[in-house]
Image 1 (tube, rainbow, N blue to C red):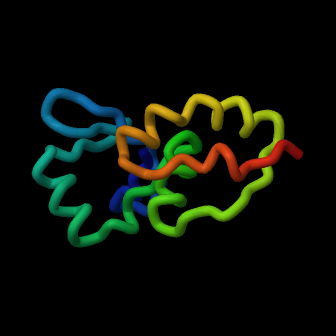
Image 2: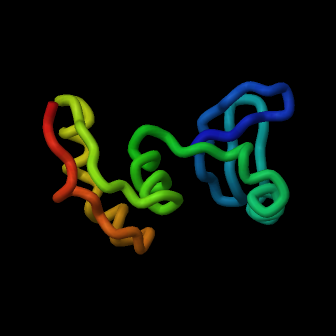
Length: 95
């Protein structure tokens, strides 16, 4: 996951014992939950989570994947199951 920090930079979030951190900041778990409710646009998925978040918001009818996408897409099954989102693997074609 990525987070848009107060200064406008998009930074990768790293999980730690009390919440989430990035090179120059930290969010406690309760602050992250509050921000998810108040400003969800500040959180964005990374490349691996993007297809799952996208399919949750708007189910995909079909897609075309390049070689790199095809490789990581093949690993998404457990993530789709964990998120409770129907997998789209049967509707994707290789470009």
